[in-house]
Amino acid sequence: MCKKVLGKARKTKPTLPSFEQPIILSRDQHPVSRKHISHNALKVLYRLNKGGYDAYLVGGGVRDILLGLEPKDFDIATNATPEQIKALFRNCRLIGRRFRLAHIVFGREIIEVATFRGHHDNDEDKNCQKTSKQNEDGMLLRDNIYGSIEEDAERRDFTINALYYSAKDFKVYDFANGVADVYAKQIRLIGDPETRYREDPVRMLRAIRFATKLDMTIHADTEAPIKSLAPLMANIPPARLFEEFLKLFMSGKAVENYHMLRDYSLFQYFFPAVDQQLDQKTQVYLADFILLAMKNTDHRVNNDQRVTPAFLFAAMLWYPMQEQIQRLNSETQLTPQDAFFGALSEIMSEQQRSIAIPKRFQAVMKDIWILQEKLVRRDGKRAFKALEHPKFRAGYDFLLLRAEIESASNTNNEQPSELQELAKWWGDFQESNTDTQQVMVKSIVQTKSSPRRTTRKRRKPRVKTSSSEV
Ligand code: ATP
Ligand code: MG
Image (cartoon, rainbow, N blue to C red):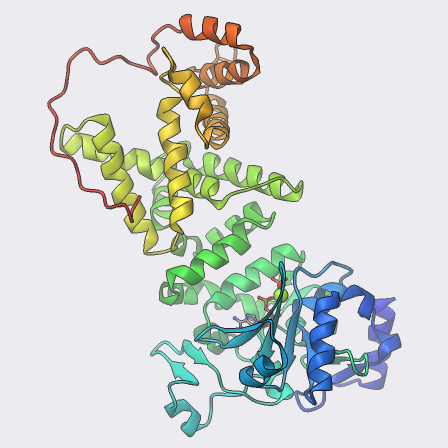
């Protein structure tokens, strides 16, 4: 039906739209209707219209409905300024410095309302650092110049995102031939790709994310400069990169996004230590291990199971951690605990320079790693204590992943590896009653994986770790 509609629209307007003359699809020429839009988003559209302002559903909301998908969220664009929006809604808060916008909060649902953006070509605007600011690479540090709907459309990233639906006349306004690209399944930047990536390098990540999420291809012109402009990613603040990490890796498409990020030399800006080890192939299991962790995450997300980014972070950094521990041990003789905390501090502070991982997730990563050791030492009351650990489940799942990867290279299938045995032991232990558990604990023989140290190592001064780093 939609393709037909597009044909119709093309017939009446055979030429490409210009930003001044968009393709306008009337109510019967597109599938977007109010039943697809959340009540809260409609409320916001109506209230803005009633207040005398123009307001449109824009971006993913329109695009996804055209594709027959359920939009993740609803974004609205208007000619009302943030202050005027705030005056209309009690449940409104203004956010953002680089890009000021209004959040209208309805319990768990937030409707994002942005004022139409304009061009940064006026000297007066350029000189006003509050509204417009650019660094020497062309990156927009402030994007708060307001404009018309036509200018707003030109300032959006991809053609498929420059689609506007009006709840007043029920028409879709297509400023950049986005409807055609939606059906041709093409991700195409608006304007000159290099300039647009320079203004905001995150658009490179967004191109990848939409390509995998919507099963589309990146148009050749949009794709061409990505690899050479990848170094611009170094300008992205770690807090923004954390948000992008979540969108890329926690939305059910982690594996596909990971491959594309690696192909375009973008992965290194998320995990420099991992990227380096992957290139140098210093760790045999690393590539398979992180892939398995991502597959696992995708599977959970796609089956509506709970996921925490901490698990994926712990998996990503596990081998860099092991390498760092070994390096510390080879330089100085440390107790295992000191080597662990020393490596933890170094790995985390390096990682934080790329992605600002919130402290609550850092704490879980640390727990998962510490549990790997705790799960080995099961004698006495230790196994029971480990079972009560609040992050036991995550630690155990992590152990399963390690066992799966490390035993995959075990050619002698008849004999399970130590890790496999350990994972099985814990699987059985959880399912046993207390009496059996006691027997299991008693029958533990000291294996190579749980060595009892016979000679005490001299304690070296502890490597300082600050609580903000672990
Ligand atoms: P989804 O919400 O499904 O991830 P979306 O297209 O709605 O996809 P948002 O991040 O919600 O993406 O942004 C809403 C809209 O804002 C986009 O559709 C696009 O028009 C515009 N936009 C977002 N980020 C940028 C950017 N970095 N540069 C230009 N326009 C952007
Ligand atoms: Mg959106």
